[in-house]
Image (cartoon, rainbow, N blue to C red):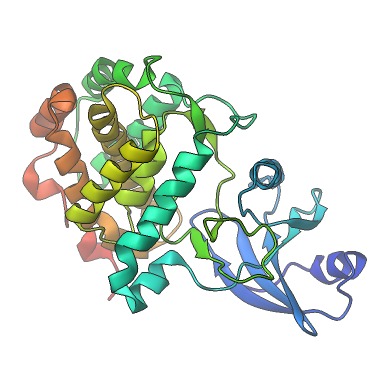
Length: 333
């Protein structure tokens, strides 16, 4: 986490000539984040180095969300050639850590996160590509591309695609509204910013991060991201209560429960593939520790009748001993 060599000049030109640059975080991509401190003010430096990363989608979605009244980080400065973006600092209070300290607040805080989604789903859709069949299939295919070989399985990949082709029409039908899908709306990307000096503060008191991959799609997807969290156990009763709350405050469309299960299975299959890739390709073995949770969520989604073709494929191609903790032995202690 050494700052890029061009960071000091960038910060000087942005009006932060004497700022200290402190490592903050990396993520599953090649982006890195640093906290910038000068006197009594703070900001966050995003290092999104080209050509592997492009900060323009983040900037565009951040500006769209702010225009709609949501708390996305304000863009303070940018150098697209170097992939450097200076953004508003929302602090350190993520929803995940807050609930570790205040477990009794879970339902109240999740209800606020659901209200934010319901609000977002009533606003104009961002100028982003559609979450269409090709994207769904490409993402679901990460499981057969990465997980199956890692476990030594030879699977029927064409039948896998055919199974998804059989179930995806339900989430593509016109009865559900098309909304801005943030795609990584979960407890590590939602900040609590209940303080009057926070720029972009709105009635929800929640700051949004990691939305650069937003697409236009089905409203159930971000509920899956939140309630079937890859990195945090969300109790089944909390998930059920929040789904009921969403239905009470939003217009979910027909067959919403089936759509939720289909998108849950699609997302969880994708994440299993991504986490395997992060280990095999990028050397990030820590993601293997999430596999038991991901398989548990996927199997629960597959139990929905709307997913029968996909469930049948899994039963025929990935036996029980090749799921859950099949790769966890490779994770570091």
